[in-house]
Length: 256
Ligand code: BGC
Image 1 (cartoon, helix red, strand yellow):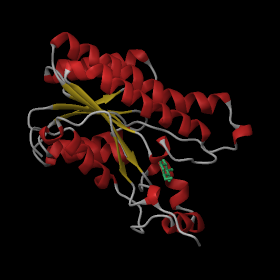
Image 2: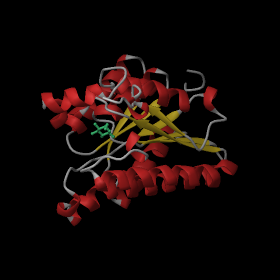
Image 3: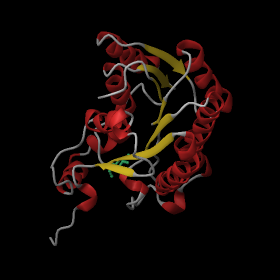
């Protein structure tokens, strides 16, 4: 990919799943990567080792994006360690399954706080730095096919992803004059820890695969390739759009 060497990328939730795939890919394309994680450090260490193995540089930061202090610390670390940052990948996300009438306030708040509020205020802190330095930048939110498509049993999740879609559209307009592009990548069914229980349920898994024209789950690498393109020089005129990576899932309809 053109233009990624010497760029600095912040990737949230980079200790596992899609975030780990993105961090590794950007690192091997020559970007310096801030590897954010919360929870267990082993995954983040694995991400950092993979980046170093391809000759790249990574810096691990434990930051819970639902806390403003942690958000500021994440941004400060990028600037202290690498002098600035160019790319923000809002990837960290959680989902909670429950009937609508059983959904608790705690679960609703957790989903919204990580998926939406975290991305909102981290983006704000990142943009303030770019604005002050008069620097351009790239923002990619990892949303979901469910920013647009229903997902019964996951009401808080669709609320967070639908809102992320509108936030991206608004920010593309507001940040364009600053030279900052904003896009969403909407993965479908990707084999990662977020859908562990689905992967372990043979019946549910085969029903899902029946809905995917390419007849397989996606991988974090499938998503990472698109993200690497969107933050490369080849995508400098792309802003305000959602790009779906789902093996055809969203377009599937069969009368049987
Ligand atoms: C969800 C997965 C789900 C997939 C396809 C993703 O956004 O995180 O749990 O399998 O969408 O429905």
